[in-house]
Length: 321
Image (cartoon, rainbow, N blue to C red; front, side, top):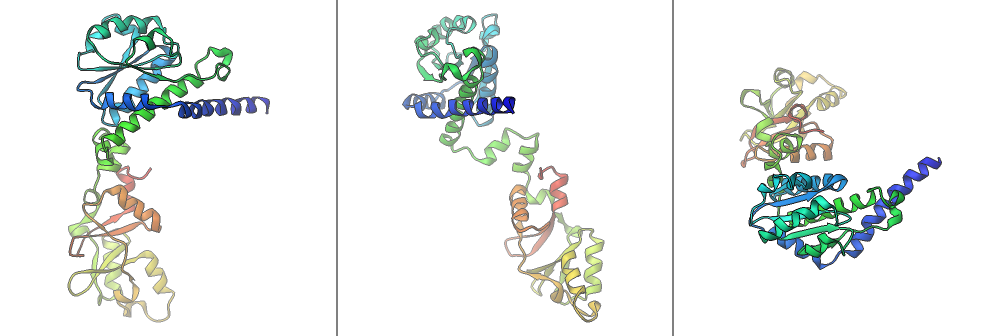
């Protein structure tokens, strides 16, 4: 239990470091966001060691949310990689001490090209801070880290600030889910945001469909032959008026009388939930989850069924999960 309490205390200290950072944040952060927003080039995020890993993550978050950014390892920078830097760029330098030699060695070159520097640092009196155009104080109490030396709470604070800046830029750009999908086409996120119901629905001959007055033997045949365990029900004008699922069959079987003498109208659930072919697949999934259903009729603007979306299709496409 002593070790468990120690771990809890460490987590509390890291969360406290972020809370203190939030209290200390001022207009300098807004100026930093504006400087990045209006940058005509790319954002070069640089750092060393553990802080360098944080810088790499900040660059990745910026890139994924509409801000062109690249990570520059400070040590590699002074050995040739500074060639990526252009006069129209901006440097976001992350260093807790602000005096890391490799990072400081980059400053004269950056200043020569008059590239702005935003510093995320725990030392506002450091060499980095003195040379930066905007300094954001990311300091944490010394006793928040083992021996006052091991970067834990300080890297957490720097990462949180980087994330906050990235999300502020996202808001400033009015970045939408559809924009996010363009940067994530290959993974689950992209599939969830790009796929439309039209991409996954059963349509044409694969769309189960019966009329109101059809007898139950033909209803069951339609449900089983299309392999979806359901069918849309239409009226004489071809409009969607109901759906019959396996659950509806079980319900009507429990009623007295001959099931085969009944019609689709007797068995259907009227006014079912429905979607359009242009609806995002993830929105259809939310509708299914909210109403605890596994299939949705797909209709056009005239409320005419054009397909059937089944949960299995969403699962197979990777939208679920």
